[in-house]
Image (cartoon, rainbow, N blue to C red; front, side):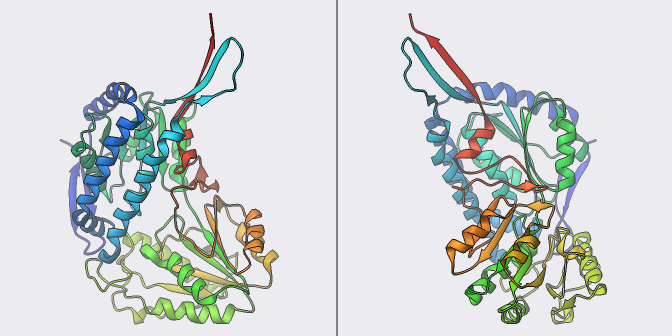
Length: 462
């Protein structure tokens, strides 16, 4: 008898969906089917692949209302925001389809008498994508779409929290006429996931998840020489300079900290504010957070939903408790949020001041609706604090002096640097991290480099 996957909705604590986990036979068949179908798919022209992939996006978007509702019930994002995930999926997918002709074209070398020389980009084979629950479509598409456009077959394993997301993605490609086997999903246990990662039937692994999960991928692939792409944790900082537009900085940085209940890899988790504007920033930030409506995600009035699980809420509550014990100041009274209750995933948002880097709240990834705000006296102090982290996914500076802002950005240890914005992926830009935030790259034309291998042709003419 197959073991069952059960997805508990954070909205009401009840089982929302059940699916059997793939057994050994199904896993073996899926990998064999992927390998066999990939060879024919790779012979298709880029234009032919684009036609199918574009039709798949059309089919996906046509189903957006159902997809948005399922997303809300699976992971708890307020329904008023869930359609935005469909829009983000479409934006990234269409960009990567459009970028493929140039990104995948052969590199022609300068003429050399008596020789023809060029470098072709070939598909890797079978790509295994392990996707997370927090932005389940937008993270998965980063690897799935360019992998398919490059001529690879894809096997998708989604989080146990969002199994329907994998099914909806594959369904849209089936409707578009993608040959059977080229894109499949599997609902898997952790042990079977690790086994597939290590399998010689898989040629590349794209993983988005925790640092511990990334370490597992590296262990499982050690000695196999296959490529891996890892998008892991973040503790992304923002710095508010004295010359910043404070209203804009508050609106942007606080939204970056609390959108999706703070459950974003590139969400703002710590804010450094110049002492000249510190009091004004904190006052306005607290007022904005107090205006949030914590409630059931299926209600239109809700702007802040529950976090994904009670255990995740308890982790954040413990961070806050520890910070307060060390002298931090809490600016939000949890009793002002009627839905906030212990032993549930309904967690009141929190803004902390009086924080420093001896506190967990400024060092550990929180992945919840809380942010620490620390006063700084100058740019040098801000740069030192922003770099004082094991992570390096994104970093933001808010300033009216773009030249100075760029100079600060050049010194920050980060994969993406923003000025006057945050928490956004432009698909034309490489998405990458440094330090414990991961390795490799998705999106942009550079993302195709990781999903293909170069093959050199050196031909001596008769």
